[in-house]
Image (cartoon, rainbow, N blue to C red; front, side):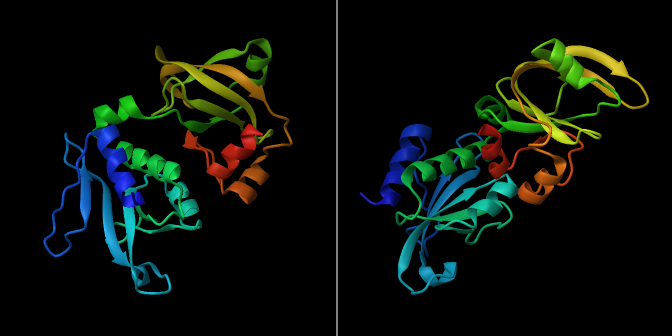
Length: 248
């Protein structure tokens, strides 16, 4: 079997989706759709190598998938076997060579991510895998270091999109200006009402401490120069390179 066949078999087994051939002029082009909203989550094409910027003009199979995270998309495009989405919106679609350059397990992961990115909202909420966040803490308004010194569990302002099982890296603002804590989200949407001139809180999430970091390890200067994190004003995703460093 070819990787193309492997992709078809994987999608059929996991998502019960059959390939749809929509174009008479391109009979080998196959689309995979969601049953609920009919959105595409994958397109298999057979294109000349030259359209991808490769040497030669032989036909090669590619898979187009959607990538919602622009940082991840940029990182992928620097790796062998990944190209800007052919005949798709290049800001959030990517083409993957189906010639063995990219491993099948990695391809399956990209299909899964594309399926989630294009799923109906209800299904997306249920299916989203655990995510990593950087969440800021301003010591001028709350003594977060004192809170974690007193307990391994704290209640924090609920961040939009954060759910139970996610990981939160707490960035303590100036004068510390560094990531100091790794936490697991154990509960969300805890009712709470608070408002002043600096802060409004409508719900809390519960964070359980998993790890502490030295002040000089993940400073803002390092986050900016090495990982492209130039601002932390609210909850934001963690770049892949930083995620790997934080786990060491």
